[in-house]
Length: 113
Image (cartoon, rainbow, N blue to C red; front, top):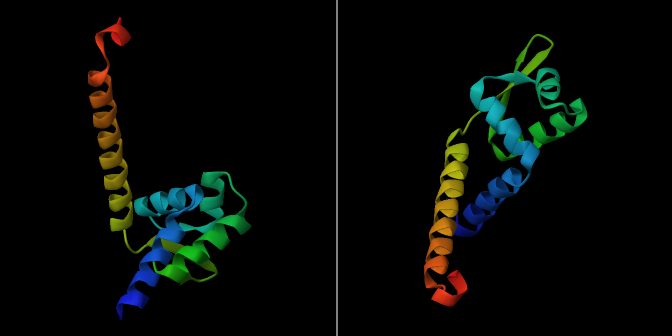
């Protein structure tokens, strides 16, 4: 894969992650495989929306489906994406907290009083 294709692929992963409901779906799939109906009920969302989002996640390769008779179950293929999101979230929060702490310490005595 050349660099251009690689960065396009990476961007498609981030695009798939750039939706709160898709992130919730991935978190649920990290627990166990789910079918569309059960996932829709669990997330209190219409089945058509869950199905569309699962298709998007499958297209980029984050999830895969397995047919069991008439039932189709989805499972998370790359749980590391949730770990990466969690790592970024924690690191950014800690950084912001540190920066705010540094700003607070820079206040002049009359501003503190």
